[in-house]
Image 1 (cartoon, helix red, strand yellow):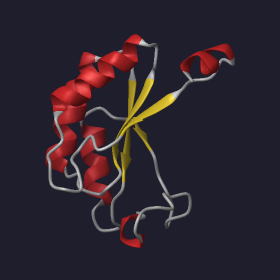
Image 2 (tube, one colour):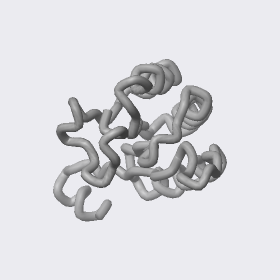
Image 3 (tube, helix red, strand yellow):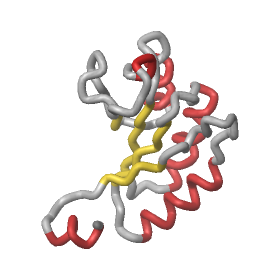
Length: 123
């Protein structure tokens, strides 16, 4: 995919799913996300989106990831893909932004949101 994007003068966006934790309660691991960020950056990927596809992220899990990875991989633009609720989205987006993230995926009233997410996770 990366080679195709490069040949067409496009930027591939890669999503690192479960970056903030798993549905079974396992915590996200900064070292694992950093390892895969490095692998992908070495392939020439310039946009990585840290993803919470199951709605388990919080300020306490968002801040450390972006705070460590953004300075460590200055050639990469990191984004946030956060499945969240209308009640909790603002704290999560603010945590990502304050940690240096300026790229955030959004869905307005669920339009454009993930079709597999439960209705309570379509921000």
